[in-house]
Image (tube, rainbow, N blue to C red):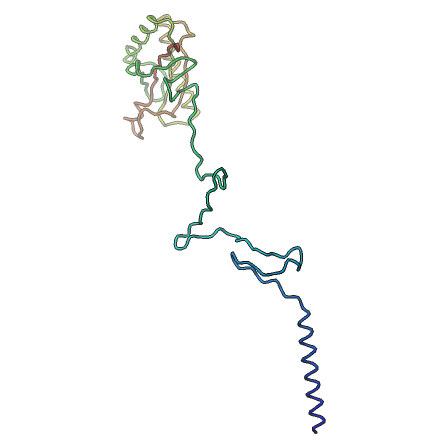
Length: 225
């Protein structure tokens, strides 16, 4: 009986010794890295071993939910601005440092502001009541042969953009033709352009605003000094 118990005890001891020896030869598994934590894995374990796990997401400021900005290093751009700075450019239409320039001439919009011609809805025919507005324009051109004009056609918001662009051009041409014929002005001194519905004189969606937007504006062009 004692001999049988001794054999069982010896067998259990042998199994325990073999099991502990086998476990010692196993390589440890790589621990799952925590956010921002360092690992303690030896570099000799293999080429893919990580010694410092960088955060996969930017740290969040506590209580705000806003990512913490990295420190700014002079001369180094870390991220592009959210809203790029706007830049001012000078073109053939205007300048911030001087008068508006059109076709190489200084533009004066104020001098003939009272000569703005208005049109009926969907029409490009000059009304008789509007013709008197153009007489000061003709007189000014005759008195200063070096000056030129640009007539700008406009429409109200109704209709398609393409249609209004064409209608604005017809209105500008109607004014131009009257000035050339009535004042015997050289055709090359009067140009036209159309803005369609893009530049309303008054904002609104009713007839009082539309009537002011159906117009032709006249711009005096003077040679640059």
